[in-house]
Image 1: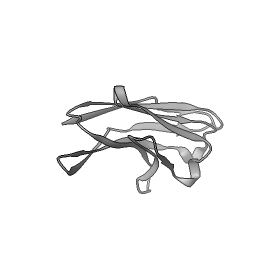
Image 2: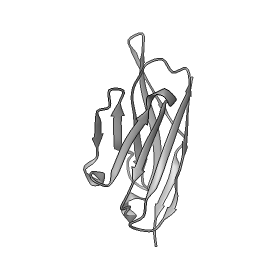
Image 3: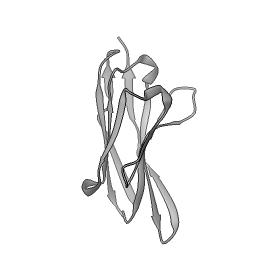
Image 4: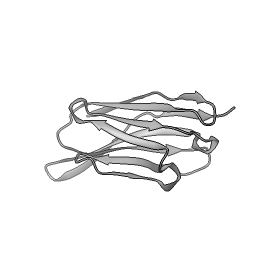
Length: 119
């Protein structure tokens, strides 16, 4: 089994910054990608940013230029630097890990961390 522990959420004023971290541990064999998703009240969970083991990244349009995803492969940790935060960024942010074991894909989710952007 794989465990994902997220940290770094909290309350921040509009225009402020936060850095989320997600550390993976357990039965990690071949990580393909790690990413951050978010879910606001009454809305579906959406992809925010994703990074592959090779370093390729993709972002939802609404965060491009403001958020940066990075990872430390040696530590199996992924980060999300969030700048110029807006009230519409308020959501529970979830970390996700995708790996392939003997050709079978698996994915794992963290418990989520609350990000609230408000004055």
